[in-house]
Image 1 (tube, rainbow, N blue to C red):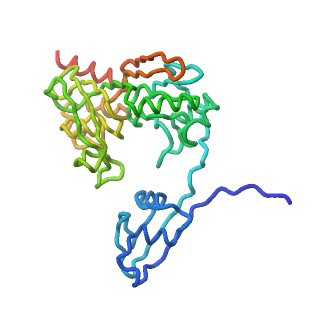
Image 2: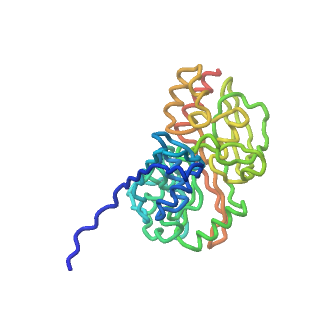
Image 3: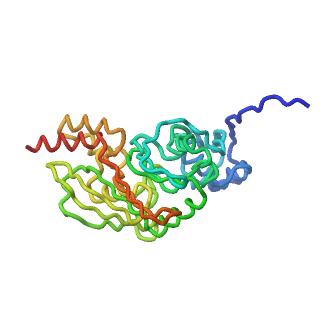
Length: 328
């Protein structure tokens, strides 16, 4: 028997009207009963992505349905299980048969996610080291930690299962040290300090994190030290004791000092930059004014302590140069 070519999975569409007897049922429960081939996690993701409409409107997962409400669902095909390698140049800082340390540019996503299926660091690393495919998750080969898309700097990837186990354990023990430098709006007065505030998902936005009441999020600790002050901007360093999503960005914003270029957490400050040259430089950041400048960890096989440094990128150096010249 000759088989034809496999067809790519297509987008599914579902629509149905809520019966009177189903009044008050949670949307996710109602959908799970009808789309039993989808997991609850997948259904939640579809709702949060706006792929589910009730009477033509986006709603939340816990929305209570009313009789005669019309529910429409668009189910895109799931991403492929295996990541496709992409030959993209990498700025390699250190490499041996076990680990790979890269200086990631701002604008590059660490691994595939919603809305970013290609052009990732993981895909570029897989093209560079094909044997990395079996290490870690199929969509995140070699990835043990991440940097936000808009953040530049040092990130370590692993090539072997032994290295994966060692680095994930070091991260859990907090023995991997990371030093970041960044520029924030405003004049941060304390010369140094510790921000110890729990971080969790922002209840008002699926793309934002937020400082939340104790018990609702995970503990997050950031140490900071001011390096240089200007009339409207502060240059500082941050060291992470924990590794929560958007941790530095959320913590600094909670103090009232969002990072330059951070449209997600400091958008209103961005539009009020009084210095037009500074405004243009911020617009050209291709991300946020944050750089992972130092990374230290214990080599998973040799036991040697590796301490790696990345110099300040031009995108931040140009802003500092302008601020220093302006202050003369």
